[in-house]
Structure formats: C-alpha cells, structure tokens
Length: 293
Image 1 (cartoon, helix red, strand yellow):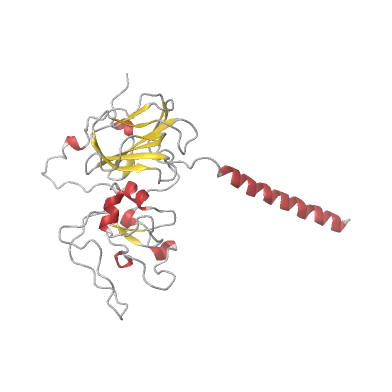
Image 2: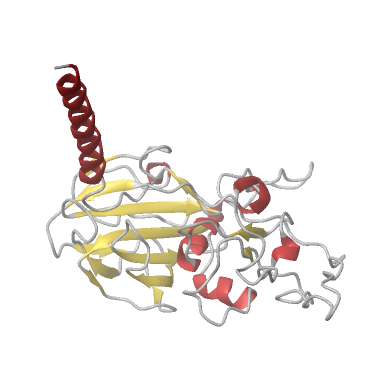
C-alpha cells in the first residue's frame, strides 16, 4: 500500500507538470503583441559580458564591431534582433543601418555583434579598420567626436542658455488621424506603444503627415503588414496589421494619402495599430493628433 501511494503521488506530480507545460504552450498561441519587446537602448545597453552575449564567433574570432562596444552611438545585437527592428527602435531607415555598417546581408547579423545606430560624422569611416594582422590587436579608437546616439527612452540634451527654443515645426507637422474608426486601445508606455483604431477590412489607412516610406513589409514580428514613414529627423510613424500595402520603400507620400488598407495581419481582429516615435521612442499619439469632433 505504501508503494502504491507513492506511485499515485508521482503520477499526480507528473500530470501537474504536464498541465503547466500545456498552459505555457496555450499562452504562446495567437499573434505576437506589438509591445512584446523592450526598445533598443543603444549605447546604454548592458555590455555583452554583463548580459551574457558573446564577444567572439564559434571560431574564436572577435565579432564584427566589437571594438566599438560601449561607445556612444553603437548597439550590441541581442537574441531576436533584426536590422529592421533596430532601425525602428532607433528612429532610422534600415537601409541606413545597413550602409553605416557595411552589411552584406541585412538578414544575417550575429548576437553580440556591435552596430552603429547613429549617422557617422563627416569624414569618419562607416566601419572601423580591421584588427592588425597577426597580432590580434584592435586599433585604437578614433578621436573623431561621435554625436550622442538616438536612444529610445533618452531625454534630448538641454539647449544652451540664451538660445531660442526648438522650432515648433518639428512637432507641428499638421498631423491628421490615420483612420476614422473608433479608438479601441490607447497609449500605455508599458503595454501599448501606440493607438489601436477599429475598422473593417479594406478601410483606408492614411499618412498622418507628409513623409517618406522607410519600410513596407511584414518582417517585424507582432506588426503584420507594416508601413513606417519618416517625416523629419525627429519623427517616424508606424501603421501595422494592414491587409494590403499601397506604397513602396523610398516613396514620398503626402498627408492624407491612402497608403494601406486596414486588416488583421498578425492581430486578433481588424484594426490599425498606429505609433508616433520621437527620436526612436514611442510617444502618445493623442498629444499630437487633433481632437476628434
């Protein structure tokens, strides 16, 4: 009887463990939320050594860009990162990230690799020179000053005393609402990086301001069919979950132009997820959009 009781206890424990596993699997079903990943923190991110990221590849060779680790304007690639995701989180075109880092294939970056995420200063090389052959030594860092990074969550540096305030035109782009449906989810810095607007499949999605298409595709997990517009050096807007994209990368668009059709790609219902990013950081779009009647 004692052995039988022990067997029953073990069987019950096994069943309980199975339930936990099944519950975890069930919770992972469905589209990935847009807000499921912390924004890139640029040069302020923990070093690979501190975060467990590698500094060499499988052969022991230093990873690309590792000599720039910890410098302002550089970012160490983490698991799950893509060039497009890093570009969105730093407020730049993914093509610029590719060019600044001389990447042969934007779809092949390595965990621990260090990428430049701000424009190089005039005259500075896009990528650092290689290590000195035969010595394994890394060349000394250039003394050319590097501008502070565009870091998600960072506070812009204060203007020197006596200078006029920043031009209001940087913020006032004559924003309009990108869709006419009901607002079903507001901005929440911890849970929702933008606004969710309801609608029907095929409803028009409009450019919220004049800009240029820096991304059009479905390569960012959680966003579905996505368009990203760059309006100036400060602002990007993102339009997610579309069923059809009507513009292409590098195309200039006008405020109010139909750029997509609303859909439910990588979402649980038909809706538009709309973000405004200021210097790479998601901000509350309702602070910029006009009041609805």
